Image 1: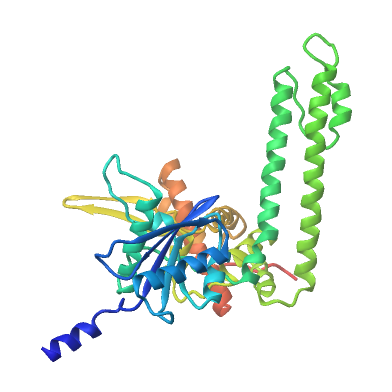
Image 2 (image 1 turned 135 degrees about the horizontal axis):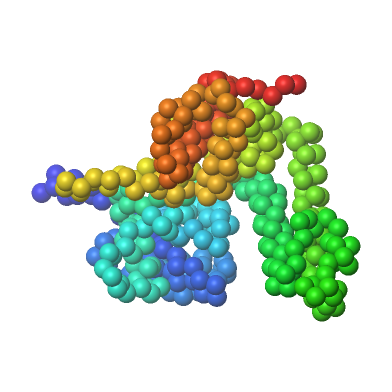
Length: 381
């Protein structure tokens, strides 16, 4: 009897541990507490982003559930709009916290399934206990960047957002003019072009239409000025900053086909703060992981998972096109020609994604070891 009791005590890793799950909403947060499987979870609602109320709810849960004050607390919440500040706050309080990729959480496959904040909290609690007991594949935990690494993302993401907004203003101007049978090839001197444009009957552009186009054009000019200022800031950092991440950008830019936009994004989003150990990790985090489907006698490939960093995946695909054009003697270009040259348009699109995956791994190896991708050329000077 003594031996059995001792064995049971050693095999219960969740003893004296408080598990806490968060369901984060805009105005309120729902917290779920439990100490083990089979126990009815304790649920409480606190105001959103109210740290003191969160700590009070945890202390009350410990007293109510008979957990010692010094017992470990393991918490989790889904990655989303709250970002990582909550994770850093909880870590600073001495609590273990996991930021979970919401798309990796298993759900009921029925066509109609019940969903509520209470159900979500209980599901997270159950999976959190399974994860703590060793089921590492029950979900995917997000790797949290440091404050400095997260802050470095804002520059290139701001440039990307501003360029998208500027492109939308261009589309608006062209759409408004097209409704009157008018067209401009460039927006460089739009006010002067409006004066010269004529409608179908030879009459000038109506004043209401002109004012509307000029208002949108003012927004276009404002965005262009902001983009130019950010690009100047980025070039200045590239020339003067001694940081290791900037050195990685300079190293990538030595390769033909890699410019400042691609090198900056790949380093700040990917290579600058993540420690990869093999090629599978590189492909998996970027979402370049194949998803085969094998069931009985049926077998097919469903394509790339697309479950990783979308910024990196998009930029690497764009770099793959420029790599094929500016690195004609590279091994990747030869491999694509041998593998996909006889296929149609769909097969070639699949081929460029495969090239992007191989290119990303080659760039990672280049940064880690300095080995230039096979057949690739470096820029002169």
